[in-house]
Image 1 (cartoon, helix red, strand yellow):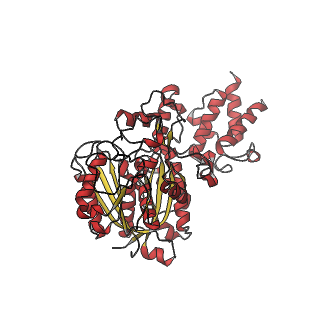
Image 2 (cartoon, each protein chain N blue to C red):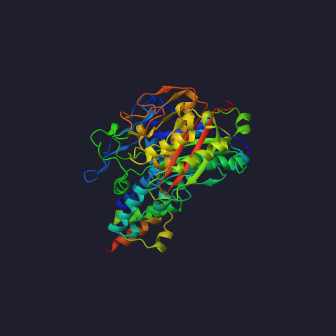
Image 3 (cartoon, rainbow over the protein chains, first blue to last red):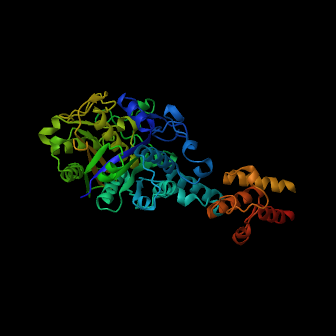
Length: 422
Length: 80
């Protein structure tokens, strides 16, 4: 089977624009969760979110005009805008700018989203209701469609290989990376731009997740303390927005052109809970089996893994179930791994979570530093036996890292990254 | 009525994101101003909005240049 490596990474997240900026803030223990000011939250139970900071240039803030012309911004929902920005960084870092037809035909794009253009759909629905069908923008549908993130990235860069977009709620970003890697393994492409993007922080999105009783509501006055995986005081997840995009590449292809190689994608496991639309199965067997499958594919034992980037959303049920599944799978090795939830700093990026967290996992391995689980003051009863990296980053040599993503509908994905020949 | 021409040009500049001096009467939206078919649909909607008129689809198809737009709008708003 052809081997696949990561040769470029790009992030736009609540910790800002760019991999370097993200990693600095993440390991310093900073939070990107703030009060929502861009729309009325007075009647919403959740009033905070992990929002991409505005700004531009050196400050790590996001300025749409830096990435897409004002004329074209109105043709795309924000999730596509964030995907375009993160993809630009990843492709630039990979140094992949082919001009010959064959190379362009062998480069594909697989960027998914959990929800897609929800805010655009909300706005268009109001136009239809208030002013009638003739006033609907011709760009409404293409700006909201999930696969248009892949579409726009392919059009901008001329990548004419496989063009695809997974939609698996909060597992989307992980599935995108895993599935894109397999397209390369199966020789459908040599290079894939892959990841997830999400921008569902609007009145409809927040109200919807709040209606499902999924969101934290008790920390509106202390936003940075709201996302607290495994802590007794946790009361739901905090919505986040952003995009994480990687460039995946066939190993020999990457070596031949001297591309930077950050990690190898060695393991990918998938499973379904077949249990409930929003709640994880109490025995955690879905997550257990996706991790197990990923390790099997990687031909690694649990003791070969040094870091787990948990799904860890800060919901009352999910955190402990995942913790239990990791403990059972790792057995004796559980005592020597570090496991953290970076959602404590950025919130839950839904369809972008798996890809942003994959990049954080790769960075942890590259730098030998485990990012912390913020706000973990007092772990829940039963949460013990694993180093959850409370509050402060830790130095640790990481040979292989595992990243978990679990989504509504009971869809699970686990990815294992390894240092090349490490 | 030159006012109509000015307003039409202003809308074209705003919606297509093109330089003002390129928006001459003879400019074809698609060939000269880099618009695609969806851009022209949106442009016609903007004209409707600005001039409070309705442009049926078969008439909209014939509006291909800045002058076409000015002519149609002048004609359709004359009686008003």
